[in-house]
Image 1 (cartoon, rainbow, N blue to C red):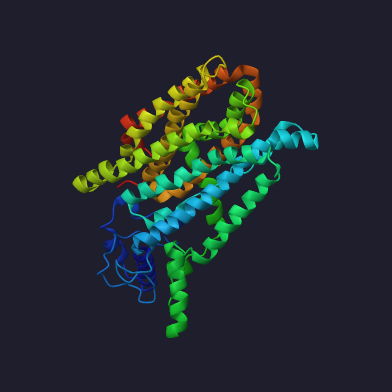
Image 2: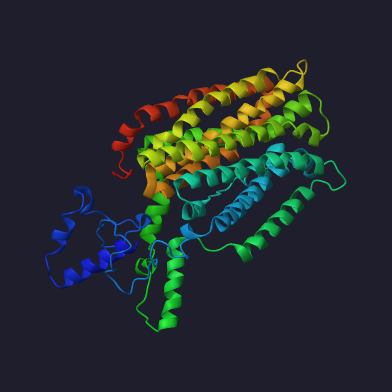
Length: 468
């Protein structure tokens, strides 16, 4: 950031003095980077020209620009102690768990509330569907280097999936108890309030530009030098920036970028299946197998839970060993390195769905159907996490826009799938309804294989992927 800002000020001064030195300085830049529209998402300023990275040893061109005091600045989130980083990561994971838990715990009360208030189950299902909101662990990027970030992201995404799975189990025991269905909401309120209060007084700011802006403000009062400022102070957000960066660009990328569009479709299907299962499991085990107690009928979710934890363990091992070793040997990781685990999971997910489908008959013991949740959970978490990591690694400076588009579509499907789950499983039956999901995931298998083989070529033709 400091480099871009310093380059901007230097250029402005040379323009004012009519000194034709800009062209000479720009000659060292790549041809594609000499003249272009500035992009705040990349940290550029209006009127700036990108400059080569500066080392910490180089003097600042603008002495009034507040930046990090060297590579070991203690206020830089990347330099926080590992204990502090893990505390922040755990709190973010708790946040995610609370939100996703609240999105599923009410699923066990839909039938009861529909009967009490005389509305359809589809209406009460909105209590689950409409809570599928955006949950983004952006602070993980602020805190962790790539290899450690993969480990932190595995834990964060585990919370994204564990919350929805814990919800039906706990809700299943609350609704028929003396507490009643309203306590599915009270327990959510208590849990969210407790975590929120702890976070309010203990979580620090981790976004570097904001930290530097606060530092500049503090230094202005301490030194009485009112010229001190940060990069954010020089680049106020405009309506045009908001429209282009946050509204139009994500959808433009979704249409023009095959990597983003296909990955988004795949992850959206996976996310939708997860939320659809909150209604499929109670139908399969509660209605078809006759497990009358809602809490007992929700216990088979433990199979999914085991699969998700197993998938996280595998990804942590891969990050700690394979990715770290390759980074040490070559000094670089290409985005396609994320795909082999995703390809493997692309086969385990439909296999688990078919096993769940064709062992659902009451004449067959419940054991294999519960075990089917293990490959399903394993496939869901690995496809989801590696797909997100792949998008981030591919789009780099445009990752926020890519993830915005991905999350928007994914949340829509996560909200839509529960709306037709009941009709689908009642009309087709558990076997064929689950088989339909399996066939859909079978059709998705070529997606990671395609990008593993041709990803580099596709990236080379992209309009948004940085050419490095």
